[in-house]
Image (tube, rainbow, N blue to C red; front, side):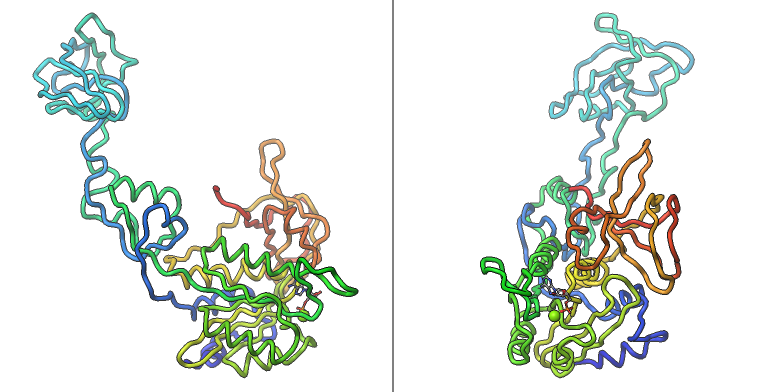
Length: 424
Ligand code: AMP
Ligand code: MG
């Protein structure tokens, strides 16, 4: 294993006691490399997968010059520039049923959107502006050459990349691949991620809660987030705060997975053996990130020389788990999956109607609700912002990011928000 901690600590401005959230993100992304392994899948199964090779266009799209509008295909040279032109209707060109002949001088063809431009024609006059007189079509002055014609290869030229390797495939790409007549694509292997929750107080659903116990909710939020990222999931359940059990879980996870996500057990004063164990099994940095929620976090690599896995030791608090996952683990796993270029999540600036208490010197990720008022998007904070209040995550539809240097936010001041959902 390369000397990870050394490379981490060589970074200038590295301070594990108070690491800027953005810096932590960069350190992680600087170390994680895309996994190897490629498989071929059918177009439908490619949804959410990461393209391993460029999809090269096998043809021009559109395949032929075609009409962008319903109207008449004409030869621009036939038109009188400053007056009406009378043309003879020679036939029709509908989508899927081309006009067979060649357009002669003084002729036009009725054409519908998508219809192939007949040989000889170069311009489409929209139907709304012409006058029909039996088999004669009267075209007004002031048409432009080539208007309303979609050129062959305008979307894609044969032999050029239609989609680049590294792209995560959305519905648009499935359609694009299909539009080229391609039935299978090469995608990267999905990363295999093992995860477990630690804590003696944790109870699994199905068992009655005993005094002082809480249900293990992180297991489900982490499952959901990994599934959404398209990972293969190895769920190792709840592991007691017991050195032997935790060591066994780490060893199994490192042997089976590309990365490990744990929750709990990394805060100061908590069962220290988890921290010791992590260090013993690999190279792990313990960070106190200057952020709220989610201050303590471990990051490193554990396992043997033959088989190691990235480790993300998240805090135990349910909200902190989600926030640290979104801010650090998400992009790292996308990079591991081969997504390139990796673009940061979009943030938008909107006025915040709630006052926010905020201390300068750390980044805060508060739960917010984006809403529309008088046509303008605004955000308000959900009620209780405690890092254990998972309901706040469910009520929220965005994270309000209050930057490192900023202090309190007064009602009406702009803040950055990260919406939880994209389109579909
Ligand atoms: P820890 O980081 O282990 O000290 O946990 C911090 C807080 O999060 C404690 O109140 C824990 O009970 C709670 N917690 C830890 N793990 C989980 C979990 N898997 N599900 C729900 N709550 C948890
Ligand atoms: Mg714990």
